[in-house]
Each structure stands twice: as C-alpha cells, then as structure tokens.
Length: 167
Image (cartoon, rainbow, N blue to C red; front, side, top):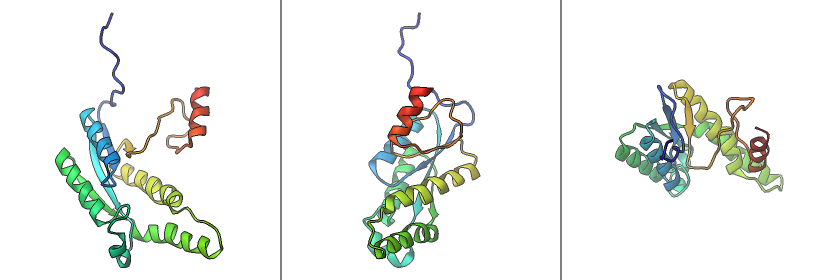
C-alpha cells in the first residue's frame, strides 16, 4: 500500500510545452511558477493590445507597457522564454470598435468579454499551436473535463458543473 498522497496532477510526458498567458500580474506569474515546478516547459506570452496612439493612456491598464515589463521580469526570474505578441490591430477591431459602437447605441458594452473571446483565448491558442504547445494556461481558474466532445472549450461555471456531473 502506498502511504504517499496522490499528486495533484502529473504533466504529460514529452513534450510538456505550455504557453502561459502572462499579464504581469500575480495570478499568471504564480501559474507560470507552478507549471515550472511541475515539470512543464513554460513559454510566457504577453499580448500587446493597445494601439500605439493609446500607449500613454494604457500605462496602468491590462497588457500595458508596465505589465509587459513585469511579465518579462517574472519569466526571466523563472528561466522561461517570454514573448510579446502584437494584437493591437485585432484588439482595436474586436474590442475598441465594439465598445464604441455599443456605447453609441445606448447599450452598456463589456469589453473584457469580447477581449477574452476574440483576442485572448482565440489568438493565444493559435499562437500556442504554432509553436508546438500542448496546452495554454492563464492565471484564471479552469478545469479540464474528461471525455470532452471538443478539444478546446471555454465554459461558464454552470456549464462546467453540468458537464462534470455527467462525466
């Protein structure tokens, strides 16, 4: 009988390459640290989303210049590569234009929802596949569902609870 508690997760054996979406914040930095500790080959990626003419206003925002510098510093400290991917054109089209259009129409837009769907998850997965990564990770909570009908899905809490109960 084994007296050791089971490990929480064993990384797949080779390769174990994971693209970590690094915002420069604590959550994604801790995710990168844990993945490294578990034996994954982490590759940090930060998306530059603000168009050049908005850079001075983006300094303290998500994915602004300081956030990119923070993410690069954390990646360096962990000994993993870090890349900045320019998504500013896509961000302007999918998020800023959407926001302006909805606002002009008298509706309350939610730019973070559009950014997550159109820019962060969609494009990050494409970049990950292009460099041979098996997974993507962020600092946000997620679960991997066994027997999922599709290889990649972003679920709401209620979706995940229902799917987990049925698996």
